[in-house]
Length: 325
Image (cartoon, rainbow, N blue to C red):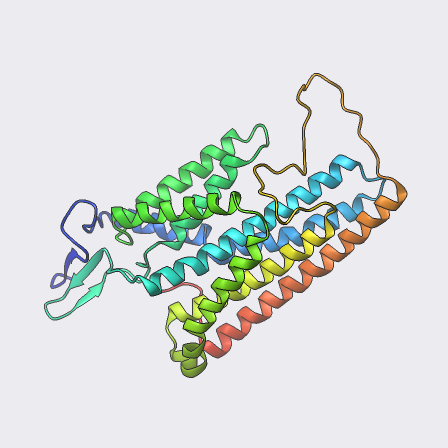
């Protein structure tokens, strides 16, 4: 910032709404966290896992143990839940930024005009909401020995929130609001039956296409970054929900209308001292599981290619940038 520019509050002078932009190091911290927890980076990892997992289980080759099939079904469902949460939260935050626009926490006054000090000042913050959900997913995981992972996830969540405030991207109130929205979305979908996943997707996709579709079609490259991001994230949400439905159809006894108070696909013995004798699938069950793995590989590869092609088209024809300058 030059000598003739002055940093000022964009929302209010009270403690919760004032500009808290501090040392440059926090801008570097927040930029690093954005690169690590960026919407595209995490989702590409998840989609690649959806391809690698069935290939690994397919190459296992021997009589598949029943516990392993449950582990595979549960793991794939959790990755799809991960994809759904992250895709939905991005679309949801874009809609909130459009329907309830808020002033940036920090503005720069150059003597004539007021301009945002940073381009990434959307409220609620997508990055804070994503790290909140990621932390809650690890916190709710029922695997033993994950305490260090939970601590690291909590550290990143806290540091992302603090660096967002001290870098000037959010006010204290905006950061707390983003955390609350992330918690609300996570727990609402954990206490709703799975049938609400396609229902909510249908409603929110109609809203996005209705609001942003005409702008993108009419202005193309000149359309706002918010409109382009809304359409692109809705496409990934569409792919995720299709994979979710296909996966649910392939799981015997999947209950669309039952509230998932806990995930019972993988259960453990109540007494760890009791020896567990693994059960092997019957030949017919093993063949059915093999066919499921083949279909999962095909569906995941198609999803990967579809998202890759769609992103390439978006970048080429709409001049879309994955990161704002």
